[in-house]
Length: 204
Image 1: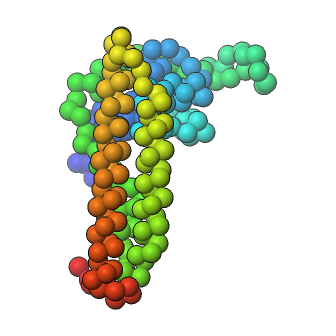
Image 2: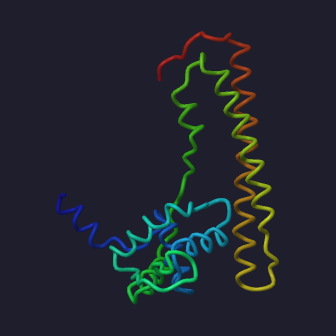
Image 3: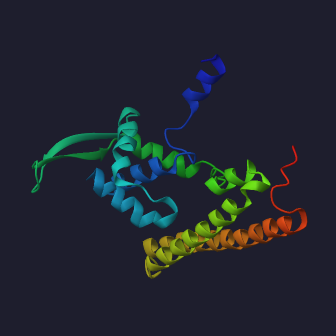
């Protein structure tokens, strides 16, 4: 590691926009301690379908936060086998990290969907599979829109208001993506009609 990289790492905030799931986990633990599945459930409830956290992966995230000194854990008794579970608590460092996260400029995020990579490295011979993939992607987007709408919260409190704004942002992005899928499909079909299938791809 170079001196510049070391310096950057030393000045890098514990939480930043490049890892919003970590920031979300710290935020919900500051609200109330919890075990891994509880943390995943609360993060998913707040962030909705746009940032679905798989419960089986939350422990790796919590482990990284513990290594960073943002959370601590202790075993506590519970009513289910094995009658003890690890409960995570925020540290004083977590409170400062959360404050710095909110004070920092938001990170610009660009969606990197699998379909984008398939398009970028495709040839005309791949067109039938690309069209099929676009149809499946559109179906998934429609399903996500329905799931997002099902979690709408009445804006009668601060929490309800910010969750409603978050769901609205997700809804607009998903609908814009569906519009793009339609444009991509029409463009590919037009290219096939013009060039014919299997003509190959020109190098860029």
